[in-house]
Length: 232
Picture: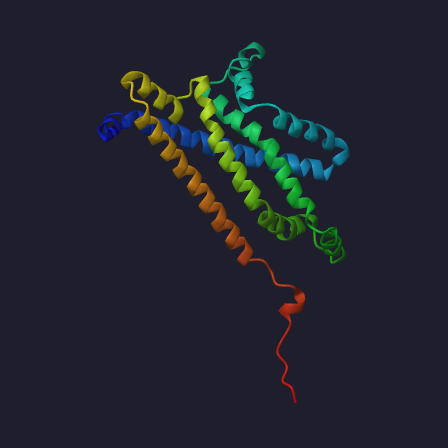
């Protein structure tokens, strides 16, 4: 029988875990987004110098489970002089792991922009920075929102693994409640609903951003100057 009073009694542990999960996911995803953009920009700016190292990093992220990366950072770090708290290791693990995927998402977005647009911008005397901020990034942003949103959702769900390195997140605190009360359904159901809430907010935010960017898409030049003509 479902006991709602149990959740009220353990609300402190659940809220603490929810807060820890929120800030670790937010910081880790922000790191993944930022580092992924840097990696993609380096790879595209100088393929000869950065192409192979970035490609190796991306393949390493794809082929290595997040849990192994967390173990290396938290348990293996001290052997090379890198001592991290469990929370910091969780943030870095999510960020470094997600950066490899976001680097490919960004690269695909930049690659999809026709080269003719950049050539035309150079012929018109538009600076590379102006072309990047006003031509490339706006178009790239529209293209990467759906896969980027999906990747953020994956990272948030996989963040439950940080409980294994003793981070007091939702999953670990729920397990603590189960061990103390021997009630399984109530704590884990509450955790599932909170994860669903976070993911639903990300999905709706991504959809809203995609819709807003689509509305800002400029019309073709042939339509911008078109005016109706009267027929005699």
